[in-house]
Amino acid sequence: MRASDIRKLTVQEVEQRLQEAREELWRLKFRSATEDLENPLLIRSRRKDIAKMECILQEHRTDIRRLAEREDEGAET
Image (tube, rainbow, N blue to C red; front, side, top):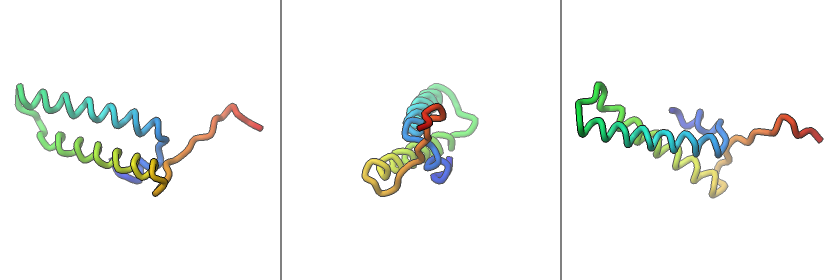
């Protein structure tokens, strides 16, 4: 996943994808310990995705760069 794509997501979406990536990394590591993976580079790729998401969330929290904010469609004033 590219950093520009991650920055287009909301904080909740990034946190959800981060959790999913961590779970997938755990499954990949477990599978690699018990059997051969078809593509062992998936572990490296998933670790890099996790690092990107964590860095982007940290940028958002420290006001270096804000993530996208979605407006509620039903909240018209």
